[in-house]
Picture 1 (cartoon, rainbow, N blue to C red):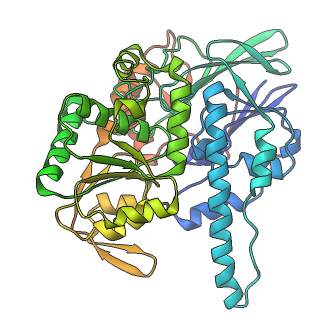
Picture 2 (picture 1 turned 90 degrees about the vertical axis):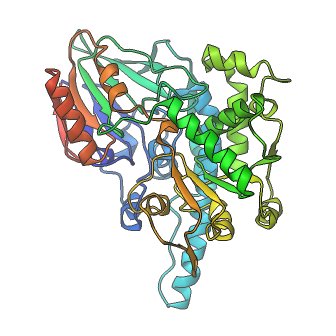
Length: 465
């Protein structure tokens, strides 16, 4: 009998990790960073609650750090087996994990300076670039829609999840004592109205389903309303002479925003002379997106191919890449007419904080929040109406207009989640994961009205099937 244990994202939206144990194999589904408040992120330092060296395989749903970010720590702690993922994820994870190692080292060095002055012992980083390099040597890319044997008695098939490039729904076929059972892990399901990627694939059968519930309590605004508001913000800023700041996640959201700005440019509605992508990580991710256009949807491929090279950059010719620190700092001298896209998406770090410092206190400027904001993050404080913004030792007045565009979310909304689970021929034994408690409860109540009984697992709880 197979056993499944639910770890961190059983209680929230980060730290995705689930352990499958069969008669002959142990497989870890995802190995994500716990993100949010400092007290929550400290949990990343704790030992894994299982024997790392006993694992036969790791299966990764996609490259976002809340699903992949502790893989270097896993390797540091002794894991030496394969890490399976789709081919696009294999390319993206290089960028994601190396950036995570850089930030980890920087933050640790900064903290150790404080600790030295206070006479406290120094800390070690969660993982290093050497740990990342060791982890990357274990990564194995796979095609969508193809069965692979990944451990004794376990076959794996990746299906399109439509969340970010390379994101996958994970199908595991488990054979024990001549009987086969099927476990499906949704990963993060995409918003079917998002640009570039295909819609999440419908799955017809499963014995056990792990289903994300990030937006289980609400729907996004319609795409048409979102694009109208997006256009109106762009025009308002152009008329007022203000700058537009867009905190953005390097993978997924950035490419969506570039594509939507490109549409406005192609329609002759984008008057700003320059759009700056001020994030080396997002630039690298955008180049990976260009290499994997085979997984785009047909409509957006056709639109891109009307431009010179069929790339996002040629679709938006006014796009400028700011790679160096000097180029980034120079943008602070632009008083008006610029659109600056920079990370981090939750305003908790990265170059966006520098731009907020120089633009947030000016009334004519605009800030577009276009992604999910975890409780306790600076981005969440902005959309909740914070009057001041703290950057280092400075307190910045929030005078710029703050916009929230939920329609750009890379996650499926409540109705889309309901539609997706409705595609199963027979209701599987379902467990809601990767969502805040209120989102899980709301989604479970909606499913109950449809006659589907679902479970909300506790952290570290187990099931047998």
